Image 1 (cartoon, rainbow, N blue to C red):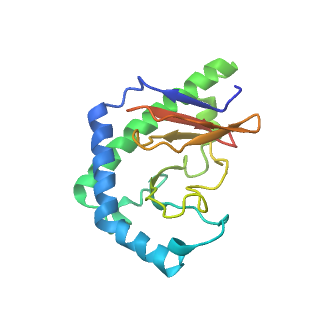
Image 2: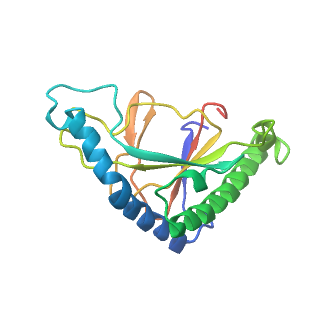
Length: 194
């Protein structure tokens, strides 16, 4: 109610699945994306910047769309094991999101399924996974990971790396660190749900 965020530990997604997602995501980055990111940094001269850059996010990312229509088969770099694991992970995240939405309905005095139904467009709900890596930055005082932003959607489930902190949220004009906790899911209520 006051923060727009909370963190869930006993969410029902197996730790083994989460560990596999993390391992395969890091392998995918090293194998398919790391060199492209380095080339982008070099081409823009970002490794030698002298003043703060405010219009760039320091992340390497790709999107997996699950609903209403999946794009996983269209992403050329994903190997079959990674596709299979991400499909399984997405199914678990979808179940968790629906459960959380029903709990929010209960707490708001709404009928079960109400929030899900208002997000159900003519083609069904939009549901996807943004997969991000934040490589080491040569000038962290001049280039931030992500610029300050809000998330537009309904409910955002974030599985963050438990070894590298960086997630912050703005509360009463103060940036508050969200320490990573192994196997947790950070829940962010998006602009539309707010």
